[in-house]
Image 1 (spheres, rainbow, N blue to C red):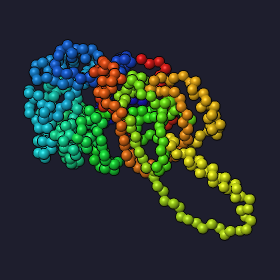
Image 2 (image 1 turned 30 degrees about the vertical axis):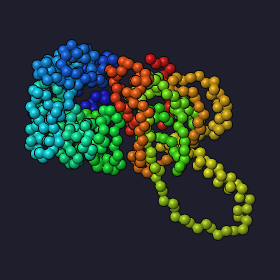
Image 3 (image 1 turned 120 degrees about the vertical axis):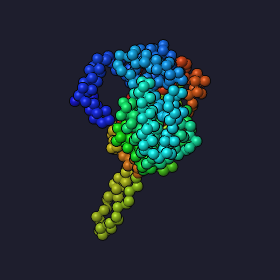
Image 4 (image 1 turned 60 degrees about the vertical axis):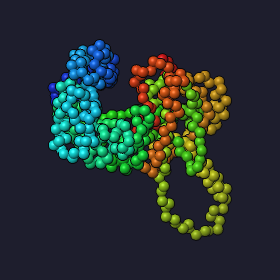
Length: 456
């Protein structure tokens, strides 16, 4: 079955004619033009030449930040639409409040709408926003804001939210989604399912969500699940690299296992149970993340800490009565087996923890010295992904006490501004799509692959 056949399902619900158009349009595009459809650049203000230039890039959408002149704003949007071979998604923050332009009907912001507690009024306000948006060429809104206004001083959440009550947020957001999409304007659940518990600006820093998983499920999880059921057509997301397997980092992946109070130094990218490729501080374009096509989160170190599930000990059963001579001659063998068991348990500490145990090969220890001696002669693998170093671990199983981390640590080892001033990131940088605050865990087993041999 063609993947596009899923567009017949909610929330898109395409009929046969609509699905046929999508498939025909897709099949007419080159590979490069299909990639271009992923992007949605920002068209700032109302320069006609800028509108034509952006349309020539053949993006899938255009975020229109319109200026105060009605005719100029409408004309620039019309130029972009008419210059595009594939119909454009024209997106905007259709929130009401301060986002209303002089030629818009003045509408309450989301906190004001929620304070009225009047479903009919909520529908009327959403209708006005939708009708004026369609008249200006919009067909995609980056609304509603689903953040919980727990830290009321937040410049990003604040009055743009529906408040602090989950039931109110769900009620008002459902009206907004339903009305706008009835008018042909796709809606977007934003900002993130956890935003609102930090009064810092998440455009500038990595903000914190302190909730445990159960509390998250009852709040943000409940809100976003409800919006998906309401048919919201888009959800905002943010995009680290796992030092064990090279995958884009997520808190559900394998990690190192430690005993209580044990210390361990993670010195490089895990290449096998016996060695790592050393970490090196390098210019961003030379980093492992950027060389493997994931530059967005350079500059942040993330640690997700999980406690192990504690099992109740089995019921003690009394041993059989001692019989003289039954165990004679076995003491030394049993002692050796016990020592071997303890040694195996100790070797599991500070090791990767896949979902199933994976014992090391029997001849691995015998090869250690030979491989260690050859490391000094090994050629560089590239800056940011340094020389191979000796670092022995083994695999073990690990049963997490809960599905979410007990603690999440994010360490910015330098800000983007400092990296630019130091010359680590070379201009021009303004138009790079990753020009934003990085995130330690963009996705929520094996080892780290080498970066590409040839790269820019």
